[in-house]
Each structure stands twice: as structure tokens, then as C-alpha cells.
Length: 123
Image 1: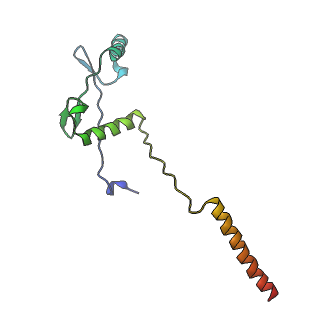
Image 2: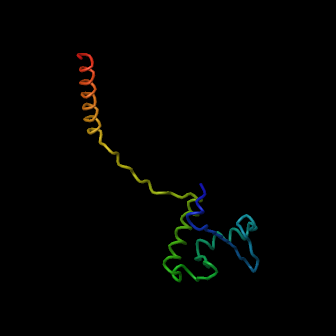
Image 3: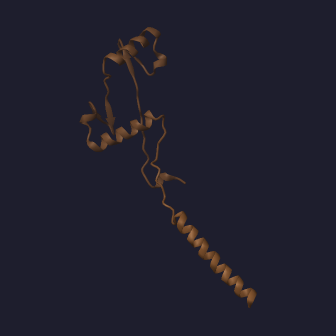
């Protein structure tokens, strides 16, 4: 089933750039050991500076975003933080009949079948 007929496709680009002394690194693996330790130390001491770009519009922080864009950003970050796993709420479906009602229906059906068989046998 192709779900793209029902909703527009979403294109998400998440960029992470680490800048140190004028040089850019695209991942932690690219950092030399001494720069990596400085980076990890800075993460614990100084808040990270982030820019948000949504449909070409740049926002300085989440507070500057309109509520709908902020909600979408929060939802996307939630998926990313869960390693791409999306949890869909589990809706419990109520059974049509309770166990007691099923037992009553069973007894009634058994009685009807018993009467039908007795009538066939007795003529």
C-alpha cells in the first residue's frame, strides 16, 4: 500500500556541524582526540547553539517558532531520539461480548440444538 496518496511526503534534513577554531567537522568520528575531549567538556559546561530552519525560514530558537512548527519539530526530535522508532498508541478494542455473555449464548445455543435434536429423534 502506498500511503503517499493520502498525505504529502515529508522531507527531513537534520544537519549536525561541529565547528572548532574555524574548521568544520560533520561528525564526532572526524574530530581529533584532543578536540573531541574539548568538545565533550564543552557540551557539559556551555549550552549548545542551535539554528532551526523550516521551509527555508530560519529561527534562532524554538521559542521563535510558530506553535505548529514547534510541535512538528518536537515530534521529529522525539522520533530521532528514539532511533527512528515511532510508537503508535495501543488502542484496546472492547470485545463484543463479555465472558459471562458468551457463556449465556453458549448455553442458549446448546439448549436450542438439544431441542432440535430431540424433536428429530422423537419425530
